[in-house]
Amino acid sequence: MSTNALAVVNEITTAVSTQVRGYLSKGTLQLPANYSAENALKAAALLLPEVKNKDGIPVLKSCTADSIKGALLSMCVQGLNPNKHQCYFIAYGEHLALQRSYFGDIDVAKQVDPSIEGIFASVVFEGDKFEYTIKRGKIVEINHSQKLENKNHPIVAAYATVVYQDGREISQVM
Image (cartoon, rainbow, N blue to C red; front, side, top):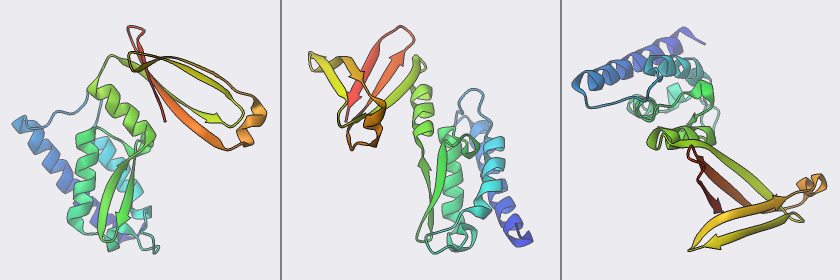
């Protein structure tokens, strides 16, 4: 990492850290329990110099400072950490955006509804046995059996099941 890139990323992460601390002290932002915005910002500071746009130009040179700050602030507000693969930084022209990953989606869902125990997803391949039961418009049971040789076949569907601490399950087929 060049000295210039280090200076730019330190300036930006310090500004976002100051902004987050200001929001916290005013009570206008609440972070999830066990979330350290400082640690997430340090993780992002290590990662950002390596992130490049579609032309191979580092985002610290190709994206505006305000958009980089916005992406970092969004990361903190959502309680995400790039070291946990919960989010990615993606350049759209000179705008840096934060994109939540599958792991980030699960983390945010658990933040919003602490009664979620886990979220499990699976893929249905051509040749799999896949049936589900609907009651009152909701999927109440999924039966899916799969053979190893089907993993080379085309994907025909996917589904996710949210399991709650009280044993309830809600599934969605796509």
